[in-house]
Structure formats: structure tokens, C-alpha cells
Amino acid sequence: MFIDRVVVNVKAGDGGSGIVSFRREKFVPMGGPDGGDGGRGGDVVVIGDANLSTLLDYTYRDSWTAPSGEHGSGSNRSGRSGGDIVLPVPVGTIIRDLESRELLGEVLETGQRIVVARGGRGGQGNSHFASATHQSPREYQPGEDGQARVLELELKLIADVGLVGEPNAGKSTLLSVISAARPKIGDYPFTTLSPNLGVVQLSDARTFVVADLPGIIAGAHEGRGLGLQFLRHIERTRLLAFLIPIDTIDWQAEYDQLRDEVRSYSEELAQKPHCVVFTKMDLLGDDEVPPIEAPGAFGCFAISAAARTGLEPLLAAWWSRLLDMKKASVRTENVVELP
Image 1 (cartoon, one colour):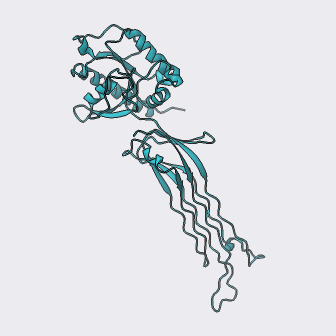
Image 2 (cartoon, one colour; image 1 turned 180 degrees about the vertical axis):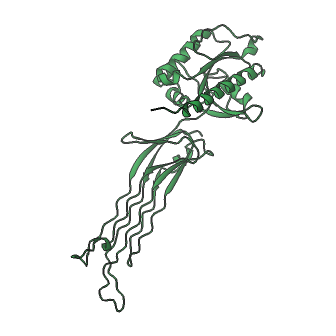
Image 3 (tube, one colour; image 1 turned 90 degrees about the horizontal axis):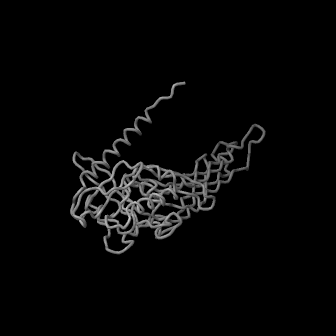
């Protein structure tokens, strides 16, 4: 089951308290204070895990508490700090405080750690309060409470290419042909109810990730159909492929509608590189690309996933575009601004 949004309760560990203690040793009548400090409470940490693809585990358990720090003891011994609680999540997870809506972080790579609730500081023992005029202090400091939060975890898939189209546009069939993914395929609307990822492997160990996303209909940016569940998953894709079945009544109208839905949801998303892919060309027995006005598209392609035709030029174009984007990103990172 694909779960892309959960709410969990987390509580960091409380800090241990310092104590009041005086040195008691034979032949040492004026030992003085020796109360130790309390240990720090454990943090709650979210960490990216490439082996996960869903937040399903957090539907079985929704409350997590880190261990508290131990209290101090005599002979200036500090209490042991509480261990951290680690919550593994898929790469692409956004973490928010549900009550304040504060963005706590985004997990963008495997091993990335984000502290979402900090443990309480341990209190000081009475040895810290001794002075020349106050040699027998009985003051101590209690430990601080650990942070408690209600978190919203939201998964947005990270893929190189996002397949965009109305229901039954051929997205799942295309993904099943170009990768090892096995999405559900059917001849009825909304066969795909949750996103699917597939790794496309070309020659020379060249690979990229393609996402098959639920079908989009008019008004999707307002939540119609699978609406927002679909649109938020293409925010992280690097380029978009708009799939239009060749048996569609009006190719231009369908392309314009898909572009409008994406633009209405996010102008930034609409600026991503995109191409047009005509699917089910085997119905016509013709491989020529139909005429269409697609300003800004880096290419128009005609394929038949069922007949395995037209796929090589499409995959080559995707790889070439992704490679250009990667090179441009590297050049931007290496730019040094002169004073």
C-alpha cells in the first residue's frame, strides 16, 4: 500500500536532574559538595532511507518517545544521556509541525539527518553552586523537558521524468515496457491510484528514474479526481512528459488542458522542461508525429508501448535533456562571484 502522508506524535527525552550530595570520606571532615549533573535527554531524529518507498510503517505506530537522561549522583558523577530515537523515512519526505505549520526540513538524500525534537538539557548538581561564601549549597537544577511535537510527514516522489496525462493515456503501459516496474494496467479510468517508480537502464550503465502518476482531469488543481494527490508528486520531477493518446478527439485541446492544470497548480512547475508524447500509435499503423502546437517543448514523439516502437528516440531525448540539465547545474555551482 502506498501511503504518502501520515501524522505522528514525537516526544524528546527529558533531561535528568542534578542532585544535592556532599562528600563523605573517612578522615576528610570538610569534603564539600559533590552532586553530579543530570544527563541530556535523547533527540528524535528523522533520517533518509533509500530502501523505503512509502510511509506505511507509521500507520501501525504513531507515537514515539526518546529516553530521558539519568539523574546525577554523588562523587560528581553525571547521569547517562538518553539515546536518540531514529525514524527512517523515504527520500523526498517533507516534515512539518502540524500545529504551527513550520517547515522543519526536507529529506533529499540517503543518510540525511534532521532533528525534529530536541532532548532536554540535564540539570546541574550542587557542586556548581559552591562559592567562597556559600560552601555548603543545597541548591540543584532540575532537568529541562524534552520537546514534544505533532509532525506531519508528507512524501513527494523524486524522479527524473514524470509521466503526465489523462486516465488511460498509456502511462502505466509505457513504464512497464521501459523498466522493470509492474504497475497495474487496465482498460478503465484511474487504473493507477498511487504513483509508481521505474528505473530505466540504457547502455553503458546509464540510468534514470521515471514516475507513472495517477491520471489528471480538468479541475485537478482544485482537488477533482485524484487532483492534489497527483500534482504534488510531480513537483520534484526534473522534466515532464505529457502523454496524449492518438485516439483522442482533439490533441491540441488535451495538451492545452494538461498544461493549464499544471500551471494553475504551480507556475514554477509549469516552467520545468517538457515534451509531448503521442501514445498508442499502433492504432493507426503510422509512426509520424501528428501536428500540434507545443511552445517550449523540447520535442514531440510518437510511440507505441504495446508494439515497442518509437521508444529509443524518446529515451535518448530524455537522457540527453537530463544530461544537459546536470551539466548546467554543475556550471552554476562552480561559478565564483568576484567582489
